[in-house]
Length: 440
Ligand code: GDP
Image 1 (cartoon, rainbow, N blue to C red):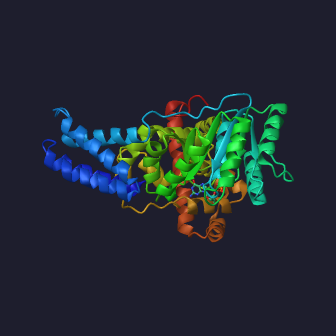
Image 2 (cartoon, helix red, strand yellow):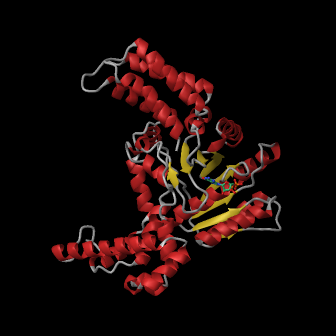
Image 3 (cartoon, rainbow, N blue to C red):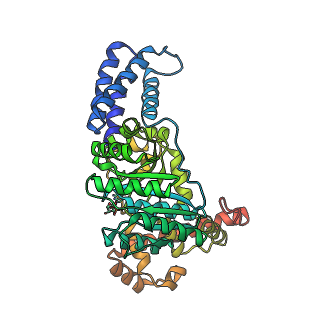
């Protein structure tokens, strides 16, 4: 995320790192670099200017502390400033009421429906009884899409395909939720390709009628300044509660994330990456984001993602098997899938302090797990549960079936056996209380 901006800012701050103290001269060059980096990331011009002026003033006004180097101090100033730019404190998503009503607005293609699915899944995992309401009366395909998401998440979807009045559908949906014991209703609305008057009237009327406790505006962060302008136009009419930034995948430049708060004066509440439901949806913390942009890592978010991806029961089950040294290839597969659920590898690396920078120019193989998965998928269920069954002729079949080489199959089996041997030793030494095997 924001790789380019991160490395540019890092380089800018390095200018100062070697200096003994912060002076008018060395600050000027660095400030210029930072301003250019922000503009290239598509940050609004006025904001880039304001922010860099503020950074400069603060840097020059600092008493030089002996405990920290000027570079460290400068990094801190920039980090604080970016945090402030993105709103300072995090503002939580806090739906209220019974049922709580959440209204989702945004342009067509912004990622509205995908976000609705991700949010529903998140709420469901928190134990909420969720109902989706499909209010796009113009595109039957949009209703189909929400229904598909409903099937994938096991969340009920309320639709009225014959009714062309979205306000009525929203009202009826909420009634349906009340009658069926739902605790939260997420209303997905129609978008257009561009802002238009009819859409604005419609969404405003829905909002006034159903009085949601949270209205979220979804916007595609890849569209940079357009995203910021659209958000402003919507907010002037709709007065929404928060912004959801979607498509913050690898190459997004970051301008939207950095400018939207100051221009629209509404907090970003969620950030979303990836098209699939189990890809990531994170709550937005300005300070963590700023630290990530400056390559300082974001360990807290990393841990939170891990908690979401790995379910506790599964962990307990694995611990038990680990203790009895009964791990098999089914377990390995489920581990790989959990890791992949945490997000794309490069993005994860960026959350580890120092790692993002260290790996910046490295090719990271997103598909490193692919051959391993292909080999495991080629095994019969019996072989997965009992790898000892795999003889030489089966190895050949597995290689052919998975499009890998016999050597790759051998390597996997060898590593697997070594892991089992190691576990056996540890279990013997600890009397079955291997590290991490407690509590199972
Ligand atoms: P809607 O028209 O606003 O409901 O948008 P959709 O949810 O249908 O999304 C539009 C397109 O963007 C689809 O192809 C989605 O798969 C894709 N998309 C949605 N969210 C993300 C995201 O966070 N990252 C990426 N890369 N694609 C996304």
